[in-house]
Amino acid sequence: MSAGRPFIVGIGGTTKPNSSAEQALTLALKHAAAKGAETRIFTGHDLDFPAYDPETAARCAPAQAMIEALRRADGVIFASPCYHGAISGLVKNAIDYTEDMRVDPRVYLDGRSVGVIGLGYGFQGPVAIITQLRSIAHALRAWPTPLGVAINSAVVKFSNGECSEPAIAQQISIMAGQVVDFAAMMKKA
Image (tube, rainbow, N blue to C red; front, top):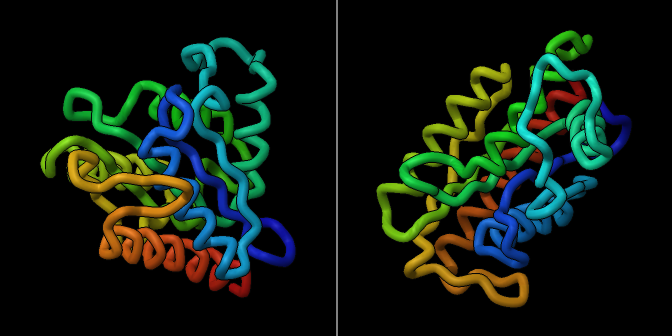
């Protein structure tokens, strides 16, 4: 764990700059920082890694930077759009790189809090994303927050760091607060 303030890493978005997923993740990290956390975001082209290959030890510099940040992280927030009923390949491939943490003293995301944001046009897709990201967090030995945020991109819009729907903005704030609070609690344990 990092010393001092909780360190929260955000992973998500799409290759489109300022996508709804990127903006929702940025807003979540803004709330985490307001609660006293240090934050780092990996989104869009930061995540455009080669397909994860467990047989190859060589890693590109962006993938190495993300894994080093995750090793230091006290909490993580994932944000993914829904593509065909599932998390995006970009986000899933980035998560696959956590396999490099399998032999760490603190394996995978063990003991870290994980917040999740799912986005898509409609209601079914975002909920599927939340379920998938929580299942992945459990598989990585993390503690998903009680609140996951499902965002219907057909209704909810982001602009200049703000969310058009106050109820969704509040959910993002609550979820980010849960990540930071759990991370701080684990640092004291």
